[in-house]
Length: 172
Image (cartoon, rainbow, N blue to C red; front, side, top):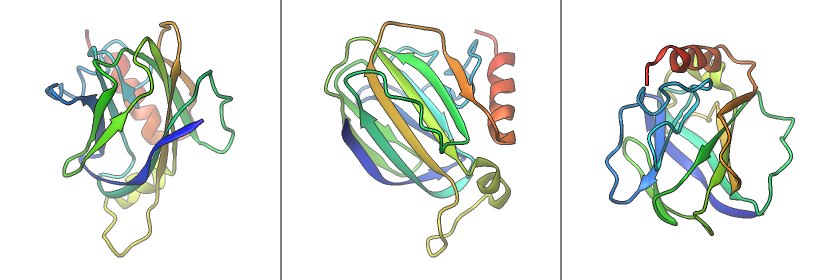
């Protein structure tokens, strides 16, 4: 396992993206159209759009690379997966006001798992100021894999349930 990123990301409007440096960010709902999960949109080729429970503030995010599929961690409230074909190994992790370089060890067909905890409490709080503790936290894992349909592995929060319904209602 290789840690590619481990820091707090400033979100606004409750989302962040992973995309190629030359890619233009797609519409939030277009990225999840036709999916069963609404937490990580991968319906637009070469982009990932990820939602958070928090509307505005800092969220801890770790991004990890695995050579094989990792075991699903038990301590997370919400877990979803998508297939992803990145446009290049060098990507950007972007939020409303942050941009971080993210370099993947490989780019041939990948699977991505997104873990979330604290989404409901963060959604209720809406905003975390600079001097306040963070509420929700996230983990993003990549590994080589053949394409497969997106899936919801675990859903316990109302925020996740809302976004899953929105994705299923979005037309391709």
